[in-house]
Image 1 (tube, helix red, strand yellow):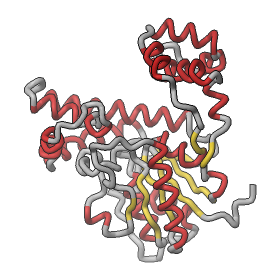
Image 2 (tube, one colour; image 1 turned 45 degrees about the vertical axis):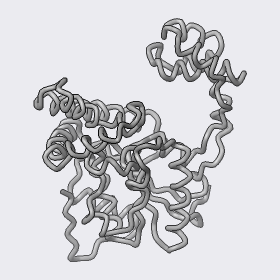
Image 3 (tube, helix red, strand yellow; image 1 turned 135 degrees about the vertical axis):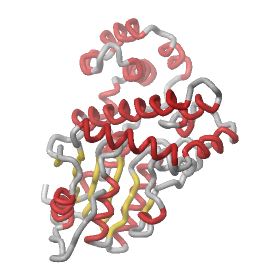
Length: 320
């Protein structure tokens, strides 16, 4: 497909603490841009610190959209975010700015680019029956009723096995049937310039550990205390965010402070590992990837590639 005449869309994706925000700001420093959040935790107003949302200084450098715009009492779905992102991308184009999607929530990004599968509402009776099944029994049933999904999924992947089984039983069609009928995606209407940051694991672990300790020292405990005072449903995404559960356990006396810090670090590492896995297996193979740590040289190179503009002769970008 000839994309020369399509409106541009930059995408910077990858695991937490990989340097996505710094790279996005560098892009915005090179060309007029709008930075659009694609992180499922950073949409919540209540999680400024624990979601590592850009601070006021960073947000003053370029227009930022969809950061902290949803109250924690609401659950933001991928479909809602995708609709909001489409609107912000259109506004950026109208203003003559480059929209720069930044985040690590693969489901959000895939929903925006590929669209939404029009799966009908699941019959609650069927859902309850499927959720009550042991995972091995559910997998055996899935092999009989939707063999394609069973072949694709691991037998121990409880969530996806249950989802595939409830879809085929409730709708009468396998989940793949619905995925082939996605609607609303914008990927084929944009000149997409994607980059997946996949730096070395040890480098990322060190950054993640340092970041979580910094969050604790910068007010994350107060942030969680304010959330607990609201007495929100513990199943809401904001209450299940990394750091919220660990700090809550410490506040309730279930963990010591060192145990809380280590639990938060571990949860962050596990989340980064899941993001690595998603972008390795779910992202299109033709998306550009870099496995280098974020350095000034990498920033200069990738910003030039994304924007088409080389740096000024006196430019010096701090990637820290």
